[in-house]
Amino acid sequence: MVKTLRILIVDDQQSARRSLKALLATRFQLADTCEAANGMEAVRCVEECKPDVVLMDARMPEMDGIEATRIIKTKSEHTPVIVLSMYLEYQEVALAAGADAFISKGDPPEQLLEALASFESN
Image (tube, rainbow, N blue to C red; front, side):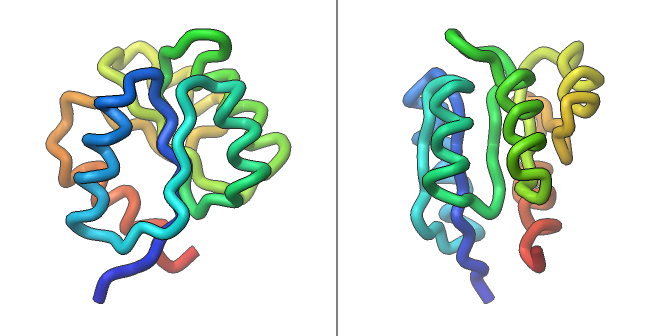
């Protein structure tokens, strides 16, 4: 059975957002997928879109994903945030900021799909 999820995809690269959306569509029915290009937009979109899960890039202009995660978790603590980055040094600070998971962009795509599946019942 395919689960319907409202997902906010946050990445400053439009091609990365498109790729994530295509990957997610292989496993989940996407409803009201929102996109943001930086942390400031992400904070606003969480309030507007009320996503089931946020996929957050760590490094972005204007406001990075770590600070955006901290703000989102302060305002909406029950909204899961998965931080994605090529830079493993962000893992500790992302989790300290309140991220529910950290996944390297170099990891197999199945890891992200499994992490999202853990939020299906939420």
